[in-house]
Length: 116
Image 1 (cartoon, helix red, strand yellow):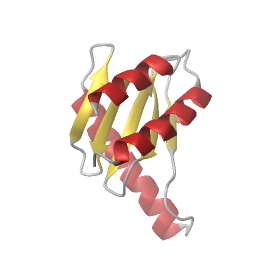
Image 2 (cartoon, rainbow, N blue to C red):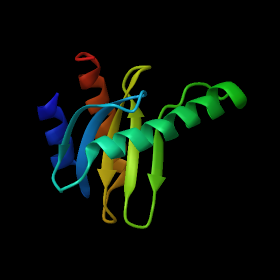
Image 3 (cartoon, rainbow, N blue to C red):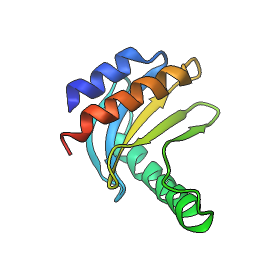
């Protein structure tokens, strides 16, 4: 799984970390080109993804969450579910390309699904 995550970070402009996380908040595998706590990134974003699942699926009747993008002042994160229990996290900087993140992230998620 690590080669897929490493390649994803290399392929997406502005990406600096990629990880596979469980909805339980645990890091499964990750690669970072910068010093960061991937455990913390996965744990915090798992909670946000669980909340999105509950809001869209249960409360609003909008179906399963297909992707989630969060943008802050210094950090952006693209989340893509891989299976019902696992998701792909791609951390991006200010010069990131969201289109590339979505395109390459979806493809990486499809490839990683066979490992999970």
